[in-house]
Length: 129
Ligand code: 5GP
Image 1 (cartoon, rainbow, N blue to C red):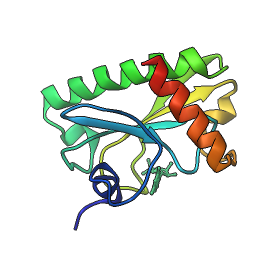
Image 2: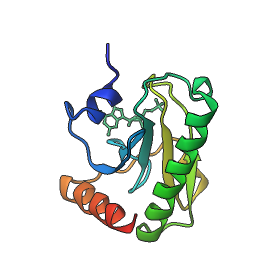
Image 3: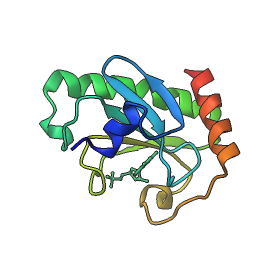
Image 4: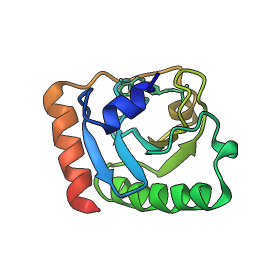
């Protein structure tokens, strides 16, 4: 069965899209640690990041870097943190998280954004890429 992220990539489930190329897709996390929290996902459905072939892994890092640089331009934060967890969704994804404090990377605190806030931040990041 297709993962929830494959369904997002295929447009069956809506998302706040940030970027896409032939191999990768980026969109806002629906339950963000901080505003601008973005997921970068390979279209190829592989559960664990270190099971990706080496080239896809390197290309995912390059894609994530481009997205992170865009996020940093528009979100007021000290830096963009990068994290890979995968305990909830078994489809490789890189979390890009705007950070101001250590707590922002713990996944223990979340922010609630309105539909308008999600739309606004997604369009600003897209424009910064
Ligand atoms: P992990 O698998 O790395 O533990 O966490 C999965 C992440 O995916 C979580 O931060 C969660 O909020 C996010 N997520 C789960 N389902 C959806 C969804 O349907 N849409 C979006 N945009 N994010 C999701």
